[in-house]
Length: 160
Image 1 (cartoon, rainbow, N blue to C red):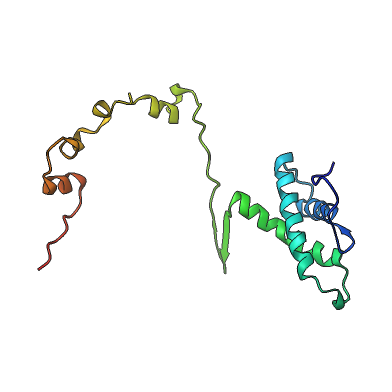
Image 2 (image 1 turned 60 degrees about the vertical axis):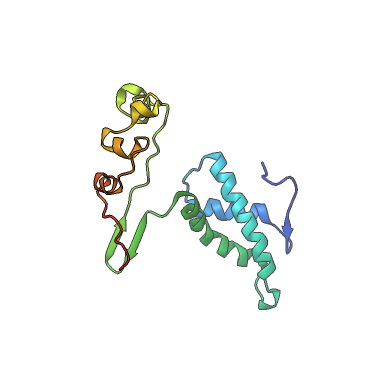
């Protein structure tokens, strides 16, 4: 099955087939979901188009060889672009972070998740506000010094 509706031939090479081969060789038997696989192919085909504009046939190298080598390296760029980078290394120091975990809004309210937090509020501003901020939100009350103290901020100094 092809992603493009037609064939995009660049310097005599089918760019989609080249992109698929570069992606499959770079994955080393790992599997991607079909939509991520298609996104990666689209990214590599677009890159192949850009490479065709830079290609110099006078160097004695076939376009397929030139593009394939670069496409294989750019698969890592696609993963970093879509998933984010998780590992940095400088000398002997390695920093690795976990990927962020998405929390579903539709989780069971009994588990204390996001839905439980939002369900605890009624939506009425007067009922949901913090009593600590009552002086700030109170109509007609503009005591700036108290407001800064309530928020734990230093009031701005006056010019000399």
